[in-house]
Each structure stands twice: as C-alpha cells, then as structure tokens.
Image (cartoon, rainbow, N blue to C red):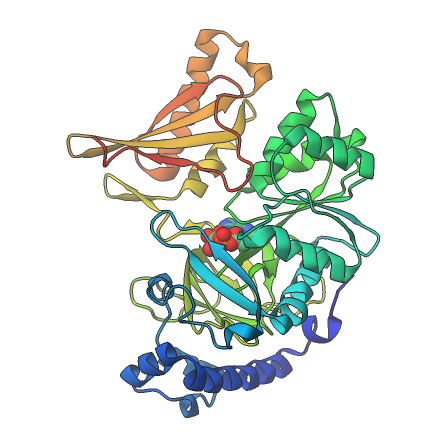
Length: 434
Ligand code: DLL
C-alpha cells in the first residue's frame, strides 16, 4: 500500500514545481525569522529573490553541524517557543547535544505522515502490530516511529530498547508483525531468540524497519533468516526530523527520499560542488515544510548517491543508495581511507562468523594499526585450532584485497562482543591514549 499516492507518485515536474514553491516560502520565512540565516546569506551575497529555480539553491551557503552547536539551544528555531510542542536532541560524542524543536504541524502533518509512508514502504498496514524497540526519549527513533504508527492505524507497542528476552516474550504473546529497531539490536534480538529456542516460525514477525546506523546486505540476510522477516532500511537524522526522511520499499536496494518535504542534494565533500545523479558524495538536505526547526542545505556527513530513475513500485521520489558511512566515520589507516561498512561487507561474506565485530585502533610509533575482532559462530567454534587459524587467514586475505592494507584479524569466542541495544559501538580508538 502507498500511504499518500498524491504526493508519493506525483509527476516529477509537478513535484519540482511544488518543491520550488515550498523552498521559496521557507527561505523567505527564515530571512525574517532567523537572524543566523539572514546574516549568513547576506555575507554570501544572496537574498530570497535569488531563488528563481531549484538550481539556484546552489548559490546558498551550507549549514553545518557546528552552526547548530553554536546557536545552542534555541538559536535556530523559526517559531516562538510557545508554538513548540516537542523537543528532541541528538547526543554528540563531545560537548552539548544538538537540540531541535517541532511545532504541532511538524509532528502531525510532516513527521507522522512520513513515518506512515515509511511503514507502508515496509509492507505495513493498519492491521499490523508494530513492536517499537527504538529508544524512547530525546532520541527521535522511539517517539518518531510511534506517532506515524498510530497515524497509519497500527497497534503500536512502545517497548523502547533493552531487556531482550522480555521483548521476545511480548512479540510472541502479542503477535507483533513489524519490528522497528536499530539493525544491531535486531541482531541482538535474533541471537536471543536462537538462545531461547525460538525459530522463525515461532516468531510472528513479517517485516523489520531498521535504521539509525549503517548496516550491510550481509546483516540483512542474517536477520531476515533468523527472524523470518523482510528487512527494510530506513533513514533519517535529528537535524532534519528524525526517522522518516527516506525508506526502502519492497524493491529494496535504494531508499525513497520523501522529497516533497526534504530536498536532497549530493555534493563533493571537498569542494562543495553539487554532483550529478549516480555519483557518490555527501548528502545535503533542505527541509521544505518544517516550521519550528527548518534547515537549509544541511551537511549530513553521510555518504551515498542519488537517483531520479523511476522505481517499479510506482513512487516517484528521488532515491538514495544505502549509506556506506560518514565522512567523519572514515578511518585513515596508513594513508588509506577505510569505512567500517567495507569491513562489515567482507565479514558477513563468511558463514563461519557472526556479524558482531569491533574495530580497535592503536598506534605503534607513527603507524596506525587496525585490529578487527570478530566473533566465531557457535557452531564453528568447536573447530580445531588449525581450522580457526585458517579461517583467520582467509578473512585477513579478503580484507587485504578489499581495503588494500593489511589489518590484524582476531577471532573471539561467541558472545564476547558487547551486544548493542541502540546504535552499535564498532570503533574503539585507543590512538590518543598511547
Ligand atoms: O538515527 C534517526 C533515526 C531513528 C533513523 C530511527 C532511522 C531510524 P540521529 O541519532 O540524529 O538520528 O543519527 C543520524 O544516523 O546521519 C546517519 O549517519 C545514521 N543513520 C541513520 N539512519 C541510517 C541508515 C537517527 N539507515 C545519523 N543507514 C545519520 C546508515 C544511518 N546510517
């Protein structure tokens, strides 16, 4: 089912006209309401009148995460606080979080709508029981998915994350048909199910809506098999709205961007030039309709590519490829750029290991060392020492041919890598401390 065929299957030219109209209104509003934008645009020599076509947006400067930090907590709000009905925040690794706000129409007319679209993309309907294991609180995952589920008419079970055995008990007892969680938590749930002796036929789930962190096709296969579901990638970020920015339909492989609300661009992260469809670069978003916390040309740091090719499902949005990493997630090891997702792709191609891994970075002298710690699947752990050594060797060789640098692989016992309930922590960087 397509939730909003009028907007989701719109003729592309008609949507472009709608995007331009909304963009011009948004920019004109911000010029008046948010001094940060006006000053930035004046300094760049542009005014709202310069926006005669969508391409003119390129003349406007980017907004960076750091701009949002500097204006903490309310400096970027475009409506008075009395109109704001909700606050969320994204926890940064350092310093203050980024605080965002929503007015009533942001929550009901945009966020709940785009989540209802997201759930429908995953095959959901009003008949579904939606087990929501995204964290509730300042994180946008829990409450974001919740309101869209209710709008669609699902029965929403607001579980939040944690206490995995209880999650499974509730899923089975209540007959949950859709699981919403981070992909790493879905793996944790799948493991726990196995331990509790529950196979795919014992678990009523049919689909999963997984996002908030990068994951791989290999992990998709594992959760699909272990839980007996169709797993869908969903994407979003606090600064734009939370989940509900883009979602994978039944065709899979690419995610529909709800671009009547969130206008995407791909840029070269070095030069800031806009790149054509199909080229990989950094994703940039402009919110066209949000009122309390709009952003213009926000640099997400996420790496992907864009296409406007029609999708067989009938939706006509722009689509993005799986996010392969973040520009700030990239490890530079002895001068070579390495993304954790490349490593995950290699690891998940080995049946003998679990998609549970950690990347430990150390420095010896001036040289960075990367150790990939990965769990052996329980059924292979009983293998001979020689067998395990050979496996380690095979993984090392495949990583070398994929990454172009040698890394150390260390197989660890099943269940020794800490299980995630939210976003998994894959990188342990010990370089500063040595
Ligand atoms: O993670 C919002 C969200 C909640 C999305 C639930 C999907 C499901 P933040 O905490 O602000 O917001 O983190 C946003 O997470 O810039 C990406 O780097 C990463 N991310 C989100 N979805 C995906 C995905 C939420 N499907 C940051 N694949 C983003 C890869 C993702 N990375």
